[in-house]
Amino acid sequence: MPFFEPSDDPGSNFPELLRRLGLADPVSSTASGDASSTLSVPHATTCVALRYDGGVVMAGDRRATSGNIISHRTMEKVVPADRHSGVAIAGAAGAAMEMVRLFQLQLEHYEKVEGSSLSLEGKANQLSMMVRGNLQQAMMGMVVVPIFAGYDRRREIGRLWDFDATGGRYEEKDFVATGSGSLHAGTVIKVGFRTALSRDEALDLALRSLWEAADADSATGGPDLRRGIFPVVASIDADGWTQLDDDELADRYTRIIDGLADAAPPEPATADSGGDAS
Amino acid sequence: MSMPFYVAPEQMMKDRADYARKGIARGRALVALRYSEGVAIVAENASETLRKVSEIYDRIAFAGVGKYNEFDQLRVAGVRAADLKGFQYSRDDVDARSLANSYAQMLGNIFTHEMKPMEVEILVAEVGHDPAGDQMFHILYDGTVVDERDYAAIGGDAEAIRSRLAEGWSEGLDLAAAVQLGLSVLAGDDREISPGDLEVAELSRGNGRRCFQRVDAATVLA
Image (cartoon, rainbow over all chains, first blue to last red; front, side, top):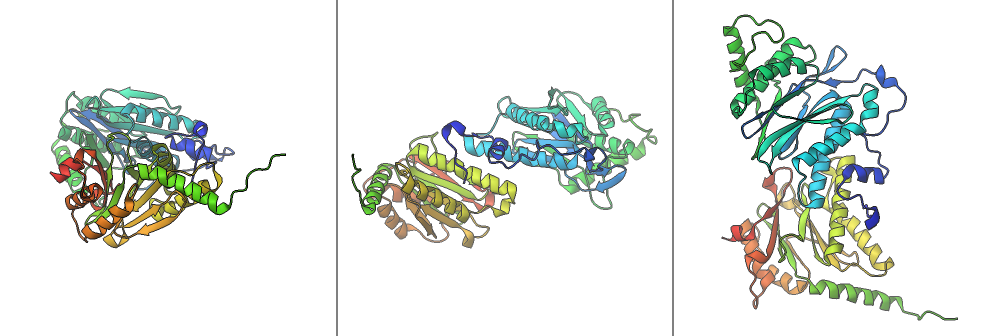
């Protein structure tokens, strides 16, 4: 059982506790050699987040690719960080998943040790430090670029952040997209976005953006109706994290596909995707 | 040349135990008892902010009486040990028994080797996936571990509270009945405790992954 002198106490910081005990922090530990530049490791792709009236919606496809091979079809890249926030990741899947695990644990650890949870901005800062800790690996191709979003209980609004590989932390006002399909997904949201969307509209817009990203980007997976694999889509509001179940996703995608069938055959990329995300 | 006075080991241990017991007896007691959904912990605590009962891990709670800074130190050490174990292995590998053993080692060590023993008694409770899996461990200032099946009382006047619990407890209480029983056994016959002076928490099987939840005594008793 770890016991520290008051002057040497790691406080409520779990990664620091790991370092103090010599259990190398897996996120910031440096990989030896430069084999990773040629290493073909799974990469996770497109995730989006957008604000609506009273919260945020987060969504991510399920595909991970190694080069041009699909390595996983059911990866969950959008996960709850705690009750009122979530994190979505794109980049080297192994490092990203480990970072998310440590991040979730750190939020819970802080909450238990301190007796109250971190502010939303505090959580975003924590994640930024973890991304920065991964910089050395990022230089070798193991880039991790998360999105962090949540409901700020003090300000009573949804907020979202994106990060760059050096730990840069940028709060976005409306929406954010990351990963290989982010250009397409981001454009769909950009065109369809307006202030004070309802939750329902925001969910449909997020789904539509992933649909278009999957249509144009080979590394982004679309809804797989045969296997019953759908993107992970969740909303976070005052009541916390709510993830859509597969039946609801199937319904919503059926509507989107029907809407597409009525329209002219879609041009690639951003063509007529417009604001009519039904 | 000065010679230190010889003190018999028996005497030394007895002095330390008396010292610790005195410190603990001054504090207010708390009880933990099994109810239909898990384990309820009811503490007499006038403070709204300095907690006696808290969460250690998904299914494990901690409660301490005695000197606040000492049992709080133990609480944080427990959270760290549990989170470390869950991180290194799996969340399923964190259990109350091994945590209680670690606490016992630490308290025993401090009791024999440090200048002064810790003036604390602690309780580690775990809610099982079914009622048969509920566990409570009562750890004394000298590292003695006692495992309790249905209920436990720690702190000042614990013996009397325990015997009142033995009379009042039965299998399958609901939360309100458990808190009511906790309130009445803590108060005894010649004292009144208002629900506002209680700190109540539950480890409930129905709470999802994190079973620990604080309960407002006034609401549940209303």
